[in-house]
Length: 230
Length: 190
Image (cartoon, rainbow over all chains, first blue to last red; front, top):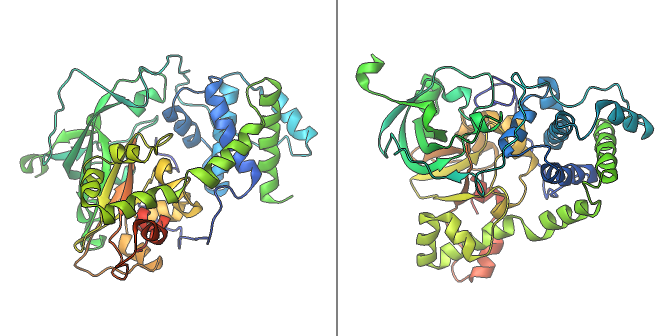
């Protein structure tokens, strides 16, 4: 989806602000949220990281930018727990009020466009799978990425849409986030590292001698030839 | 009420509901803190880098199959199903990002620093890597190519930095002390 999370190439964020000797967690509530994400998965609130990532993508854009990383996790956690029926919105509001918080403050994320619960268990450990189909592309192949975005979860960033690049590595088949995030099955797809010259991404504004590589699923790619391009 | 308070209260509210339902052991929070403070962090990746600097055979294995090399150290766990190690050379500098979320090789670097997860780094490093690296204090010559690795699937990336020129005579353990988290993300040189 064309959400605020898709940050590559956006302008206006200013310098990268760093902090010396950062702890793993700055506040205890951050570690609480981290632990609860694991507990929520164990409780069946969500089945895979794709579903969790998409919950975070559905956060209000202003909250996404302002609440910080664990603030985003907190909203994703709340969303998944509510959508799974493990925590009810009214009992959470009551609990927030009892703890001295503001129960009217909006939390969580918007509903998914096509709400669907992920009911199936993973087909195996991790995300790597085997598929019968041979990979369409090989190292050195020139490819073009899809030109248009999709309404749901996807892993093709907007800045790399409709661009031409070169396949450098084939990684085998992996669970397809675009379907897995929405409970439409794992639908494993071949995955490739594709390198894009800076000029092909940013035009004349590109810094010289720079390239960006992305790990892209086969459905995002078509073969590119010079004839097609002109 | 500070910005932080509402998140802490909300987290506590959800935690109390999960504990009541028997879905969360409150001790899990301390286990998480202990894990990422003491056991899983950039010291893991630093040991691999230092060994690669000392042992050419290990370096070859590390670059050929980062996941298998990681297993030699018993490093593993969440968020590092496939590790690819990319080597900095006199010609090419590598730097890692995740523009869509904050993918990061937890098993070898621990949890990412805030700046890695913030919009400024995620938006800018793909578009103006030389400028961002210069802000980090890493000014690259024009003839050094920069390759940015945007972690958009489940492959995780670790940069193998160049061995410091002034590190002759240091053993593997001493070298590991020189390897920083930032060097393994690719925003610094050890």
